[in-house]
Length: 325
Image (tube, rainbow, N blue to C red; front, side, top):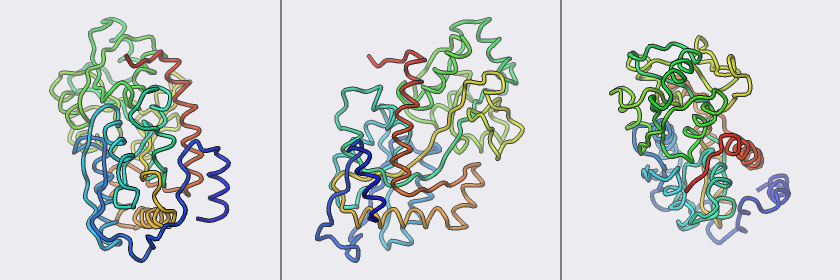
């Protein structure tokens, strides 16, 4: 770890776990067995697709299989708990996202401390959410959806993946700023939620573009807006929600973490391997095809991002009046 990185982590005041001192485990002996990659979502969604792309490339460069293990449920808490409680030897890495920052505010009683028990390593991708509806729903814009929801309060449903997750919170904030009553129906992941949307069980869904691109291209779902105020380069014809509601501007991101106590030299190796994988032309091409731009960052910058996210989502949670019973 560079002096700059060490100072950045110390300056953060311990809000995220400090890297453990160098241990007898040296870079040349790591990895010594297959690496487990914990994904806290069901197979088939955007997070799962992104992680499998990275896992495949890491397997090639690290000389060991990187095996994806799906542990969905409880707004990523189940998977993140498994990550936090794993041996800190670099042979378990895990997917983290905005949910880690969200849970710091929304979940005061968790089986692990998200700011102490997981070391953030790097961001993988930044993904604005896209609002999609079934082709049969007679709306083609946010204004038309809001008008329909206001004409039929409590009659429209949206697919949620847990009220504490970024997708559901983004939808709850949408309801707040638009003054609509749309009912959450919870599913275990993006794939089952998408199936429910296409079957007409729910009428609207906010999801990452990664998990929706194939269905959009096939005409099975209809995109009407994106959550990032600047829009999405991959879908320039789809307007942002902020066009009609300027205060609305959200994106989600995927990152990588390891258990607290993982030796610094191992964390640095993982960071370097992931960054190399994300910058590989064939990996970037695959992500481009999914409408997602890779966005690795230095560890200290990722820690600063998490700090900003805790503040941002705390405001969203307060504005939407979201609580966990």
